[in-house]
Length: 378
Image (cartoon, rainbow, N blue to C red; front, side):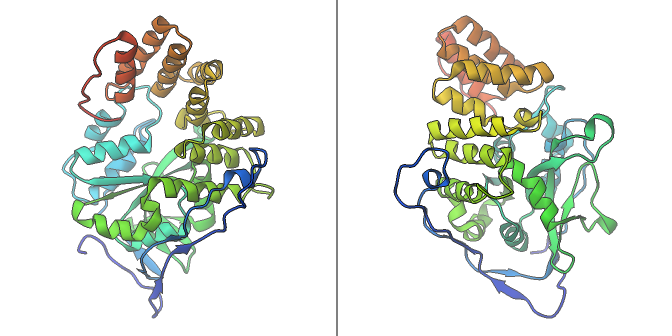
């Protein structure tokens, strides 16, 4: 493919089949916080053989230096540049987080915006080092969400940050990235991140990733992802990936948060709520719910409306710029039967992000109006 360049270190090209499998737990019903109750029985996860050189760097990406709280739009613009997208950073900001106080953008919002540009997009969880390498070797730069704490002042603290991974080098043990805050390395070849450091920073976000592709490349991408192409099977894999941490030194609040997030996708809502209870008890960074809203979604599904309100208020008190918290506040008040309060919070959610279609739909519902036809998805 003319848009990327392969640099081979050594003389041997490895042909690797990414083959991931695990053994399911016995069919029993132990307490919900034990690994045996959490792991389901998916089929083995496989992908088609992919040529994995020792080193590769995808060419054709353009670096974008971000504005404050606009790393999502910057990273997506970088990723889109690989496909010769004719838009720019301002277009991405307007389509993703038009309100100046918005501090976060979900991967599904980025995927929806990308589809409006005529490209395909897949966002998944449970990524691995090997899968990232296979995607890059297949010609797909990958946007990931990870932790950032390199900045000065208030930015020398735990934050979410999006980077585009566009290369790797096995000899050096590093991935290569285009980073809207830290740059793209020497000679535009990508900024190095050691494999283990990337894994450490990626884990708090359930190792999520976004892949863009031209429609004609869908079969090739599906072959690389294998069973991860299926959302349910991908969630089963991510659940197993997190449960193996239980009882090890790696177990922490992120472990249980990731378990809860995967269980939500599988509609195992009571178990998800229990997992989020455990995550919050174990301790999480104070900005965690700026970026991920699993506890509010789980508590809403099981009717714990007061807990939804408590979690949403805790975010609003620290920053007013997370429209999802107003959305969940509105849904919780709707569940409690207070439609006037529900309407007020949902109005705030759509005011803060005019493309927030789920909030528009909920607002129409509490007003007794027809469901609006969205113009853009978020």
